[in-house]
Length: 244
Image (cartoon, rainbow, N blue to C red):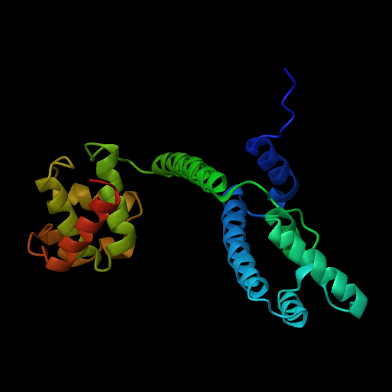
């Protein structure tokens, strides 16, 4: 039995990736560009095949090649143009998509891996990159959480809800923090405490400034009357984003 020396699609892709991936910000970006490029070349090849099958003149076909800068076909002599069109038609009729792609790429190697294989790889790579992003995000979150005293929250998720709401939606510190305190207390996300202790915690953990702590309304306690539709909507958006 003879050895099978055919190169697998994976090996061809690895070779291409090794040469060109450095030119992109990520492997997924390279794959997206390759897939987009392949679909474009399929469309262009179909377009020029229609010209040939409709017996368009060599001048028309050459104009098409000039328009798309196929194989740098400018500045050719009449004889060269004749030969160029002959081999161009022959390439297309033989179905040599790789040769056609190479002509469109002007010197850069054609990636002859099928679109379906590239699309499958893109799905896989995007999942890997997303998992890496989520892992890095989690590590950064854990590092950032270390600077906060989270003991008044009943879970890590509880603190995430509070912090995301505080970072995005707190405008009037007294009204907004009054709302989030009572809302999270009612949903059993935080431990019950004196209002003054919660306000002191806000100050210690830099959610309010010293000047904001001096606002006289804090001494009245945290009011339940700021349960507006807008704040409830913001709160729900935070929970949905965190998958709650």
